[in-house]
Every structure is written in structure tokens, then in C-alpha cells.
Image (cartoon, rainbow, N blue to C red; front, side, top):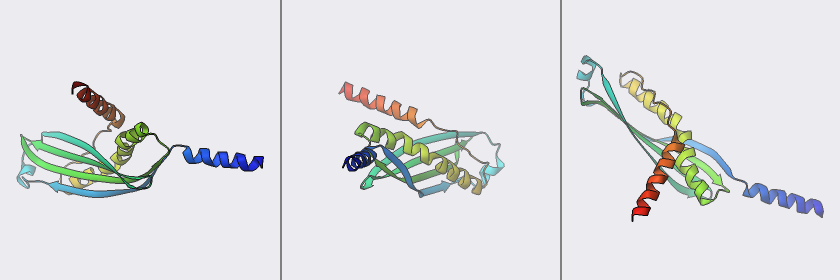
Length: 160
């Protein structure tokens, strides 16, 4: 009888333990534009790189969440767009046993950080196929971005 109680308690504790695992990574959307080709290849190359970053998440099943990391890279040369790349890198994550704050942090920082290397590789690949020099984006601290966003939301809520 005692063994049954111990096993049941262990199973219950394991079921309540935080769980987060990546189930699948997928490319949801990708776009590449080079509006000034081929003239851009004849100019002196002094690129200015602009980066926009956004994340979206939604629950798609019991304890299953889709997270999409959206990255837009705009590269200008002489103040004119040389190329533009947009990537939506998606992932399915099984997440259980987290409170609301932990879940929000996982969806806003951990999951996008897990997707970033795949998005970065897709961006680099399409840029090279467009006949431009490789564009390997620098690592991004998603925890810092998440905290900055949280502080901004709190500041906005305090002023209302």
C-alpha cells in the first residue's frame, strides 16, 4: 500500500514539473526582394543594415503552442534599398507545468531564442542566392528584449 502511495505521489509530482520541449521547427513564410538588381551590383558597396524583430504566439492544442519569430532585414546602399528579406520562422512547443508568468516568459524569450538560429540561416541562405555577400546576423539576447518589453508595458500601464 505504501509503495502505491509513493508511486502515485511521484507520478503526480512529475506531471506537475515544468515541461518545455520543441516539437517541430518550420519555415512559415519567406520573402526576398532586390528592387535595384542588377544595377546595385555595379555600385560601391557600403551597406546599411536595418533589422526589425517581432514574435507571435498562440495555443494550438492542449499544452501545445505555436511561436513565430518574424524578422525583416532591410539593406540599403547609398540610401536606396539594395534588398529586403522577410522571414517567419515557426515552431511548435509542448509546454506544461508553468505558471502564467513563466509561460509568458517562455513564449516571449526562450522559444524565439530557440528559433533564431534557423531564421538566421534561412536569411543568410536567401541573401547568398540573391548574389549578395553572406549576411550572418549577430546573436540576439531575447531575455533582455523580453524584459525591456515588459518594463515598457508596465510603464505604459502606470501612466494610464
